[in-house]
Image (tube, rainbow, N blue to C red; front, side):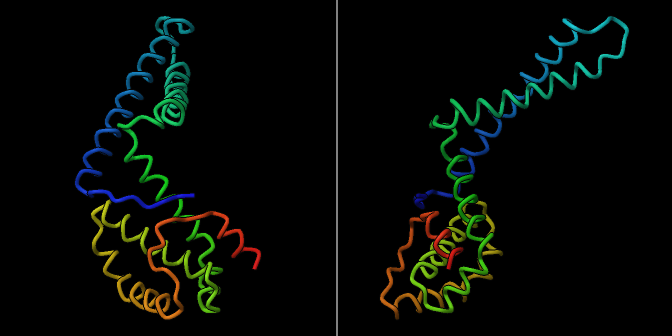
Length: 173
């Protein structure tokens, strides 16, 4: 279950820039250290040690990914980036079955209606967090029409939660 959280876009961008810089610096340090160590341990002076350098960089990538997805994932300094990643991942899951969502909305399926409302709210937040107001302007009419349809059917318009099981239900319908 994913839930939309209130985020200040300016603070979000500052925090994600900082966490990106931290992860990038970690990767650079690991890649340089591991490449140097591989050349020192396995390389030959004056020979072509390119494969050891590439191996060190590749090991740096693997260790960085393992650290980010492991112990760093729950750290407060990475939380805004994790939230943004989860938001975009949830929206992509809906996008991948949008044809089913659209069919369900046309049939007044309450699950599809909720999914589309979450999608609209999530896109609105994502555009705000990414400072992409031009993309948001294109959605306004569709969002207002869908919100009116929800209200007419008596379905709550505050769909701040997304349950992946809803998509499974729509796929099987």
